[in-house]
Length: 252
Image 1 (cartoon, rainbow, N blue to C red):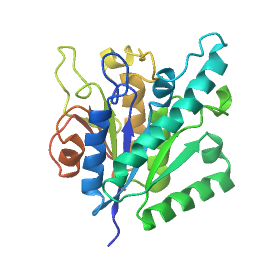
Image 2 (cartoon, rainbow, N blue to C red; image 1 turned 180 degrees about the vertical axis):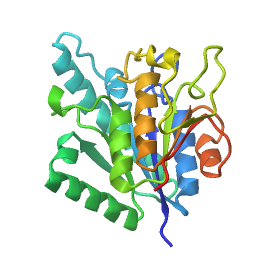
Image 3 (spheres, one colour; image 1 turned 45 degrees about the vertical axis):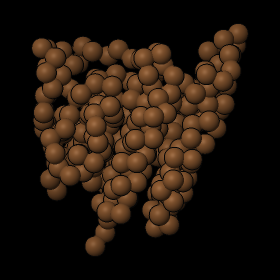
């Protein structure tokens, strides 16, 4: 019997504190939850946070925006992956770093090599950790954000679940209450379609998360948008508890 595949996207706001510094305690708890479900699931993490880590280590404001982004990304990626490796080591789980561009999904050879690599890592009980390759990315090769990367990876792997962790409890209605479910082809609420704000570190907002979640659900993946700070959020979702906003997948 094959293991179900779960893709977990940890957004910038999902892993930082109010002061925008990395919340290492929270990340340690998320890693603990991932380790706890690994016996029954193949898990891939799509992580943000590299530039946030980089900003805490160097100051590159004197350069143009592209160069500054590159410097923060490559410096911060080392710290971020070192932290992940140390956290997963406690559970005797090795990790692999994969940096991706859109070419990896549009060029067939790249696509097949990426998929084969990921499947092989699962077989070897390694946790793949992916991020956009900000160093080499030019505009035409960039993802809209890591939400898009997570959606494309979910499609590639035919993932059973995609969990998008952020700093809100889910998709909210006009009164701030969580909307529990959406169908994969349901119309985007007006108040959501008009909410395209982004964070100071991340590139995506709730609108892009909603659209990507519906796209992934249309491909057959069960999608959740939930708050990373909710206790045992990952564990609760894989157990089938009602958490955040669920996008019901298309049945094939």
